[in-house]
Length: 209
Image 1: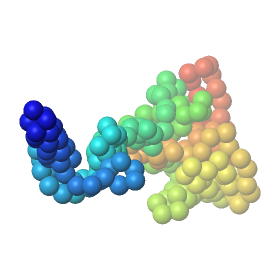
Image 2: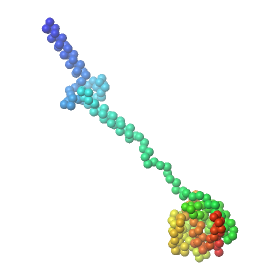
Image 3: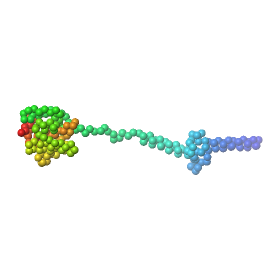
Image 4: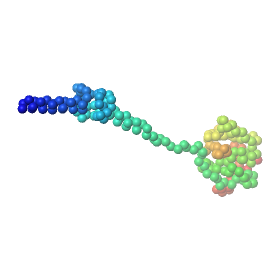
């Protein structure tokens, strides 16, 4: 009877030790884990993956999750600071001003505009109507308008104006709108030695000799 009992105990211990060996191949280290070398796929592990026998998390799986999270965050498009490109076209509106030169109504193909509360006229057309000559250096933006002994010098984007070489400051600078150069009407008339008279809010008379 004792022999049977001993034999049964021996067989039970053999089965248990075999099961443990199969479930946890390889020896554990001081931390209670080890690197899987055999039967890895059977236990849901990868070859060479370090894991714990005491239920701890695998260092390999932790790095995978961290890598996956990092990958997702890095591929997310960033819209911070994005904005539509700004237009360089100056903000203006059409002027209802009617201009008379030496008593005759002036006609402008390009029309007059109001820019920064100031009436601007197309340079080429007003120069022809006033019988003046002008030159325009596109590189420097300098405009020179002359009639008789009077010369007025403008610069695109600058409020500085020169009357026969003497500098003054205007309320608004000349601008280019849709390829047309516009200059302040009042400054041009003054520079050419003409007189300017306002009949009402929408009528302006220019007298030039």
